Length: 475
Image (cartoon, rainbow, N blue to C red):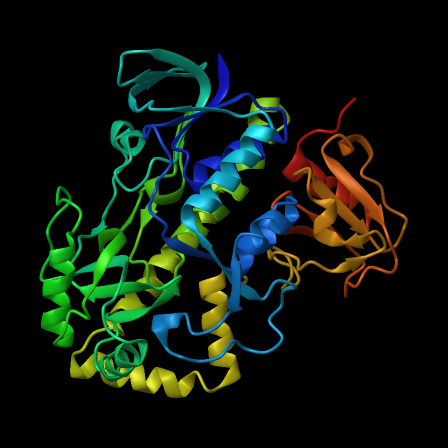
């Protein structure tokens, strides 16, 4: 019997598996695909996801395979520079091929002891008071204490759970791929510059090694069962939209995506939970989807581990939905807004021009970048200073950098008074007494996901909050 079975080994499932293994949870990841995806789509890690990778000691190996870009120009593709002095030591976008990122995250999970089985699709499950019986497509039955569906937008786990997935179906569809072109680069650049003035859904730009990324509006909405687009589909749409097909040839990969927007009504039913695209889908504008799922996993991992290990306070696992579903609601809303701003209709174009002017004000630009990069997320932990419920940036401490102390996925008391103790919680929470820490408050208690759970300097108040987040003290 496993402690947790995870359906899906994409970025969300791989991160969740690793987070659980940091706490000794027995994890099995089931992935329906027999081989990792072969096409090389570039994805972007935003600031908050980069910070989380740094917290677990993964960032250096990911940086080796990615390319840094300024953290600006994301909101509705309005070309504005990143605000100066973003509140992060990692204030950049990291572009990385999706297969590379998935491989690195899965490799990390396996190194920590997670088991991954490919070619295994979850077909059904039943849960009872003690666990979940998972049935695979070939009839094999497995048993676990919990099941987490990280199995994408068409999640079998969500459907079998009977959780509603309300929202809006796709109204538009876009073709996207990477391929070579048959005309000189300067001709491509001139044509693209002219077209982008009127159609923000179209783009064609270098993707490295003589290959171009092509994004072009499709003729209509083809539906869920539509096959992948062909090269001829791209040529036809390019001729319609741009007046030329640019001589495209030799595609590396081709796909289509819609602008459907949906949010699961619940993230948990009993011993079954949902994360990533199984819980929320939205248009890719702003590049938030993968990041939202990865951040779900960092929020859920330590809480589910605490439940399995037996020290979780009663309501802890339910805080996963309470904290993450509102974040997803906000992402869905901002992608809805961005999608409207890509319209070629006069009204949305006028709003876009107005917003572009407003983004010249630093406060507006900073606010929108905070939304896209998720560094503005604040969980509701009750009344307190503004820092309470927010993530703490990677500050200087006596032992180097703060995030270097979070690699084990434990809580951390950062104590500038040198008077406090974590006492009976030392098996779950580390303690750093450091009066030199670059911090404007006396002490903070960090959860394993880096969010500030308490601020103060009183031992009894600290003990109350240690109990709230980390259960009863040992002994």
